[in-house]
Amino acid sequence: MKHALPVLLAIATTATIVGAVVLSLNDSSPGSEIEILPPDTVTESSDEIDEIKVHISGAVRSPGVYAVTDGARLIDAVQAAGGQTEDAILDAVNLAALLEDEDHWHIPAEGEEGALNSTNPVQDGKIDLNTATVEQLALLPGIGPVKATSIVSHRNANGPFSSVEGLLAVSGIGPVTLEGLRDLVVVR
Image (cartoon, rainbow, N blue to C red; front, side):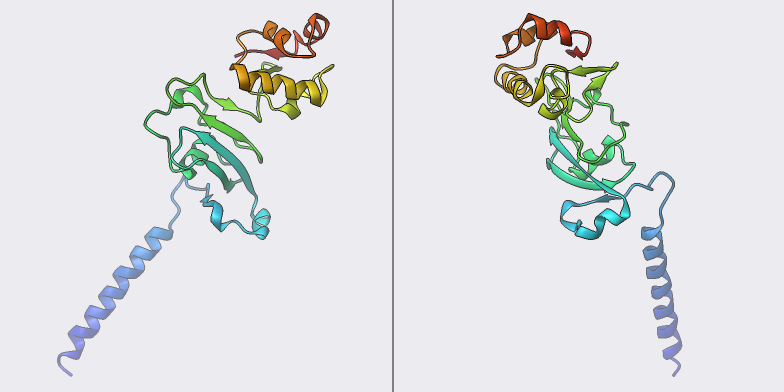
């Protein structure tokens, strides 16, 4: 019985230490309100906890689609994708940008033409020809889905536009259409 007391004290001490470690791991510190969920843990009921899904490509360790909590920022999605690669140019993107459901962000690597956020190509009230999707371009007057597809195909085949006038090289776009778009589009 004399040896039982030290054993009980050792067990109680160990339990206290383990409990403290578990509590500290579960403690949420200020600034850690955003929970990043790996894509394989997302279930059909995940929509109930205000999740959004974003696509991260380019110079990240694990490009893909990730579920993040609504209100997350681009830096959170980059971290969810394993962080940036050594050749990533993070200065080309706004890491503080709020993410929206269905966003697609491309983190550029050295030698690339710059970052693309294909879901937010509107800058200064104008649509960026080098980052807009087919759906976004199709909303422009006189464009529609067919010409929008031609614009994106031309951009993919020939690289980014260097000027708005570059639209004239796209099949189906002539000077009249270009003049109608001049105040609505931009090349960055």
